[in-house]
Image (tube, rainbow, N blue to C red; front, side, top):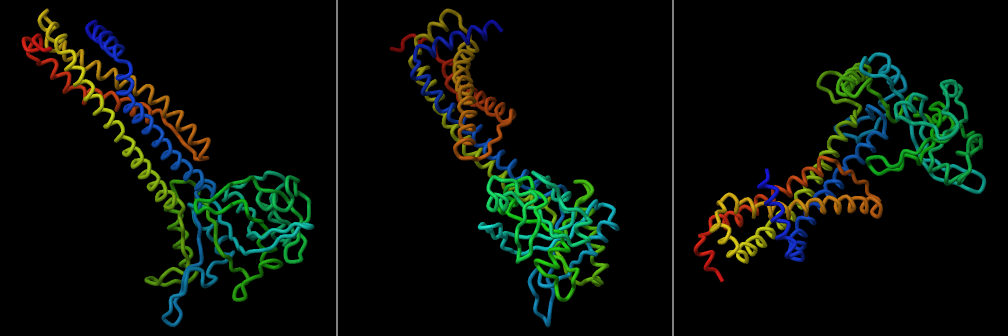
Length: 411
């Protein structure tokens, strides 16, 4: 242990003799470690952002959409027929053990007017369960009730984007807005959710009781008055998503009298699959960024090897004198290896500070979420030490096995 500390003291003294050269040698390691930490932080931030966007859609959410049908040999597009109804939602909630809630929804584009202000947005007719499924909370006011749905009450809940464009900074709760010449009382404003995974503004929406939407705003389907545009289904827990999907698929096939071998007249989208695909893409990006940044570490290691070879050449007579007074091969080897590792470790420590600073600057100026983990810092630091050992071994070995007579004769 004493020999190791002695080697470290000798190494630090040798590095202080050529401070500028030592600093330039460490620069490659500093840039490499900093780049690895910053780039891995950017990739992890992207993954975390995707997860937050998926969670903002709702907890354990499964979306059921009308499917396609064939007519005279022609396959119509998805949603071509109104194959889903409000009764389907009630049946799914009542008969699927792995489902906790199911809410029907209809939607359409509307123009909302408040005095001299107006705004084009998406109106959705829903039930109170929709709020729970989508994990909505109220910024002000309260959500409409089941009694409002039964009475087709002219009440509305605004997303924050709509509220700001119509009322500015004022609280619209209790105010009246006009939709298709029908006055609606604003029951409250939803807490903002931000963008969805597809980039849509989830706050640019107005929610109405589904009965009100179909009877007074969007209109009911002529073929089936209870037809809806989608069903929002919440699995009882995350582990039952696949089971819930299988149960509701079997139930809907039975209710729609779809024979074995026939295609479904509906489409089921499990957001877990969407998240898995996007998370995989983000992880690939993170690995790619980390790999590119690691090249800087390798370049820095090559720089250490070059400088150590120069140092061995410059100190050839010193090596010969050490060997002449009894220094063993392992002593010379450890001395130069410690110098290389010291360069790497000092560069790694400074690189960690630079990398953390770079992550904060990226997050602040680029408005991009970064997430630096302790594991990435430890791995970058450990890799910098391994670079010092790997690229410092050859120069150290060259010094250790130098012929003492030839070393003493070196000018």
